[in-house]
Image (cartoon, rainbow, N blue to C red; front, side, top):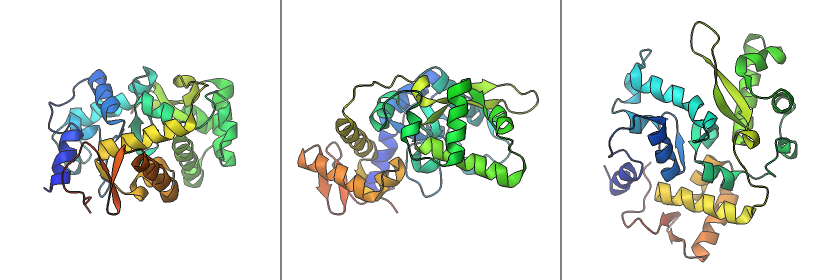
Length: 269
């Protein structure tokens, strides 16, 4: 394991005692700012699963076990309690954001209807408007309201949920017990589930979000942050260069380094 991998292992709480409660999970997410639910091969980001268990994700198979079931239930409980935002945000994958980072990344007015300011597909707007009008809804109820039947319609519905997650329009908000099988997740508008201040400095928030990404990743390249936050490489590079000009992060070859990290700067492949 190279120096950066070792440093990330420590920074991402993987050397600490295993997390056993949603409150402790919230403390982890507040510290790192963002985390995937489960690890994804080839994606170097902190994950909640890896600080709950020592079991490799590849060994889960169909028998998840108690650790996987625990984090699966927390993903719906934590947003309901205001402990962390959850949805398909980081690279469009299931992920958490701390409330502080959510406020810095949230680019709209903070009203329940502010999704009208976003650039969304017609299907995504329909889902958001149902939530605005009817309040939190289970995915089963949304599928019924939208008459989602068949694989093609189901795929289009899921694509809209990813789109709404990437735009931070919706979050998970508890579950609804449908009887047999897993409970159905309930979705809610982010601006109703979390307190988003109306008066914010968007540029300052963007800088804080970029600095948090560097401080958690230790060494990054612009496209990595751009892909994670959905900013694109050019906007991410501009934010990182501004932090360099403020002496808040260091420029190191093609990457950017946290001031707190003194090891090798080459990110892992």
